[in-house]
Image (tube, rainbow, N blue to C red):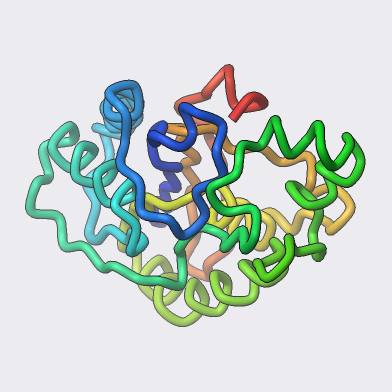
Length: 210
C-alpha cells in the first residue's frame, strides 16, 4: 500500500487578479502561502519518499512550504515540465472574466473547461493529459507499486488530467471537475497500482471563482 497525494499550488498573483497564467512564471500571494501551509497540515501524518513538482515557481514554492510544514525539508524532489500547467496560448495574461464577457458564456466555458478544444495556439486538456499520464505511468506508478509514498505539487489542469486518468472520468464529465488552489487529494494505492481509497483533505470553497 502507498499514498499518492496531489496538491494544487496556492493562490498565485495571477489567480488573485483572475488572469490566465498558464506557463507564465508567477509567484504565490501571501494567501497562497497560507493555503500551502494549510495543505501541509492536513498531510503531516504521511511520511513521503519522494516529491514531484513542475518547472513553475508557484508549484515549487507550494511544495517548499509543505515540506517545511510536514517536517520533511530534505524530501527528495523531482522537477518535470511534464506536469506544468496548461499553455493558454493567446489567452495567457488575459483576464478571465473580461474574456467571458467578450466570448460569451458558452464559448468561454468551452475554452476553459472542455476536453479537447484548445485556446488559439494553446493546449487543450487532452493535450495536457497526453503529456501528464505517460509521465505518471512511466516514472511515478512503478514507485507507488513498490510502496513508496509520493507527493505531487502541481497545477489545476495538470492535476485534472491526472485525476481523469486515476478515476476514469469520462470526457463528458471532466469539465465539471474543479480543483481549487491549495486543495489536497489523498489516494491510497495497492501494489497493482489501483486506487483503494480517496480523501479530499483540504477544500477551497472559492474554487469556482478562480
